[in-house]
Image (cartoon, rainbow, N blue to C red; front, side):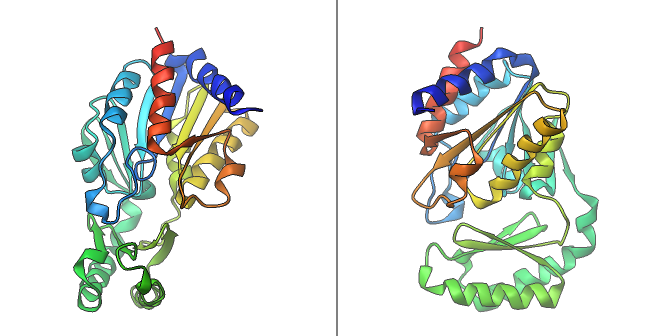
Length: 262
């Protein structure tokens, strides 16, 4: 299938039954360009505009991210959207924030890990997330990658936390079996078409959940959109139906979808 054919097929799938379609999108690298400092990430203005349009046309528009939901709501304000943060450990629906109760026994360990990280690493490398988890980045100082991995492994064992390896970062989090695939599985329930757009290793479970739903007969059509970058994992291309060029390419595709829906 050519790129043009894949684009045509994607648009057709997303516009065939709009009121029975769920569109779910990752944040970093998909709506927001990759930046050196995590706190500087902002979605493209056109991304906000097109998601606002689609939220009034589709059954559901959601943002599924490793970011805290507070960050998403602040920087990606979409009145009609659902927000899922921390890979599914928290969400905002109808303005209400909810945290997975399974994380509560581990919150003290997360807080202790944050305190210890602050004594061992520069503050700009540490990103606490709503008290539920903490991510340590080495993008600003790539030479510290091995050091950070080693520290994260020690703290994970010490405080009974799990590690999630992502793009140039590692997250210490409660060992709760939840990922973006679980969030997507919940948000596509009752829909005929489910779509997800993402760019990183953490997005692969979301793509798999769409495939599994079609195989199980709970979803008629899955649309898996990969957002490329120089840092995209090698598994991305095989996991998706179409590749777009960065956040700008995703926005351009979604604008065509919005234009097609009356």
